[in-house]
Image (cartoon, rainbow, N blue to C red; front, side, top):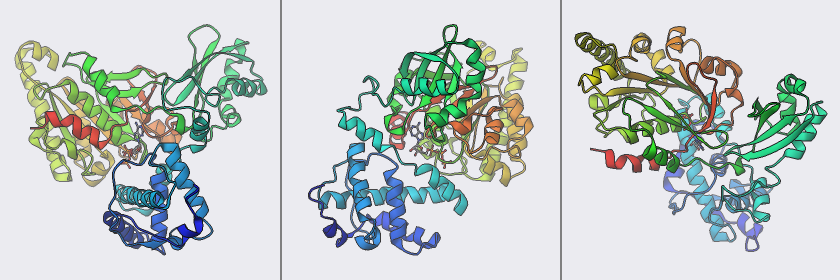
Length: 515
Ligand SMILES: Nc1ncnc2c1ncn2[C@@H]1O[C@H](COP(=O)(O)OP(=O)(O)OP(=O)(O)O)[C@@H](O)[C@H]1O
């Protein structure tokens, strides 16, 4: 920080890109904030929570703001400290001179303003929903731990041995002893986001007490909102206790993982395998949509639903050709499925982004289902795989509906069509993936729930929402950002940390498939 003289910083002016300047102005007016500087500060904060800055330059064509209003004289030291620390902790371009500070402010302001504008529009321009989105998405990564790692000479290698901070065996043993539970930690397994402690209960009779004390354990271990989880171990008297780690020590699940899986996965095209992510201990979590046979994906805004849907879509596309799979895509949000618009896999050759075409598409799918049943009758078979054995070339159809609640609320005819498909479409090879950020009993009726037994719950606000999605609590304690519980018929929920599919990954993977 030696070249950064705070007086000089305070007497400078800072600007962002033309695009971000436009969003800053629009948000300033729309949110009725007193100054543009307030929006700029929000934007910079929003970007700081997004981790490493992307490489590449941002133009500097926006209007400039004096640092004294942008950061205020009292807070300038804290802001500069934050920018310097962030760059160091995330491996972004280092901030050690006036020029690099200028570039970091420009880039954070730019990225944050674009993200804020996205938050605003994806919250339907509703102030309360916007604030809710913002609070969730602006959670700061834990730089302190990352820096402690750096100082200790750590690096980003996922295979490195756990640091003392990540192995909290001693603290766990002590916390449990204080709760009257005597244990020996037998093993410590570092998963991508949680650390699994394989624990021997000295007295088996303590198991009930342990299950009842999970909340106190969380408090004793300073887990904040995240929760410890206890599950049966692999030997008598052992249990697994999974403790979430600070975000800075998570190992992201990159899209390569999904691509590698797709290369080696079963080639059976009767299966519609979906790659959900990796388990607590890092194994692939995969299931077959064809047997699910329909799926509800629910989670609050920013929980990672859209990213999860991309990973499901890519799982299907990487294993199928258009003659074995068609995608019926309905997206009232209008943006999420855009990259798929030119694929030869599209049912009706288009994505339905408005209510009337969505209704038409669903009506057509019901007709398609009925037509398939007529074919099955004629052939004397009862489902698509038997029909295929008799030479019928019928592709499976995966129907993805983004934000189902919006559609159902806008048109009373939609819900009965979805219910009809949920009840009967499985044997015809038509499978639903219904996403919603507002899981409530009104939009997700009992009829649909009983016919859509596959569930993926991302983080939700309340236990009652978890109940609607999973029929049990638990999703309210997830860690966000693609952390999910997958529950398939007849199985206990499985935890998965989702693949972080970025837009550029989607575009790159789809390029060879595009017409
Ligand atoms: N698997 C993941 N790993 C790491 N980060 C993730 C993952 N999934 C999502 N995220 C982070 O969470 C952000 C929000 O994800 P996403 O847009 O999918 O949420 P959403 O639930 O669809 O939100 P909304 O309903 O508001 O559109 C992403 O921009 C990304 O930063």
